[in-house]
Image 1 (cartoon, one colour):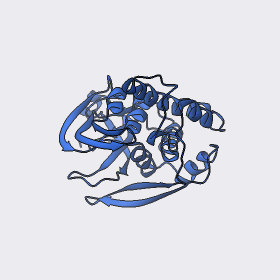
Image 2 (tube, helix red, strand yellow):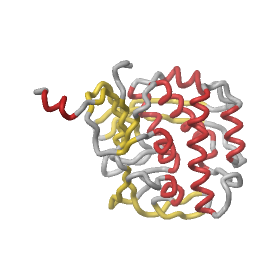
Image 3 (cartoon, one colour):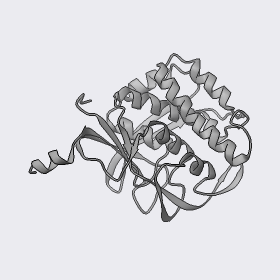
Length: 252
């Protein structure tokens, strides 16, 4: 990694999910082996993670796959907090990962009319979601860059089936998480931003804009799971921030 870089920008032209964020960061240059070693610090076992290069519309990116035994229990926020706090991960990583889960818990509690302590995490409490969220915290912390930005987020339409039944899109929890976070509607069916993706970005992103003034150093692509008319990719860019005046003085 270039120690001159001071900005990370998520270009979410096709939305974002937890696994797409983590995949994009690995493609950007975060060591997969380092990620695996750090994840071993969690008191979880029985899972495996595979990453592969995959092309979407001719653009190569990383696709992550997490395999784990089927679990018959749903976790509460306190259970996930304990898993994270009982690990030997860096305190900042723990703090950020728990903050992400709290965004989801607060949103789910609002939607279902209960408290965040009583919410049963269904899909988001599964082992793969825990790995995605903690993995994103590990990867972003390892880059050592606090100026993290994103584009506004696209939100699709339609319906999706989940443990609670049929939900309208954007999912109610996603909308709750994205309060005060710039977004826009797209006239396409499907879930473009998942609750996990929304919560990770809400935790880490400090500024949302169309595109920053930046000298580009590295680019990564995370591959999504669903085929769409547009490339289902999340692009992440790392570089050095520039002032507009500096750009005007240079000729390219």
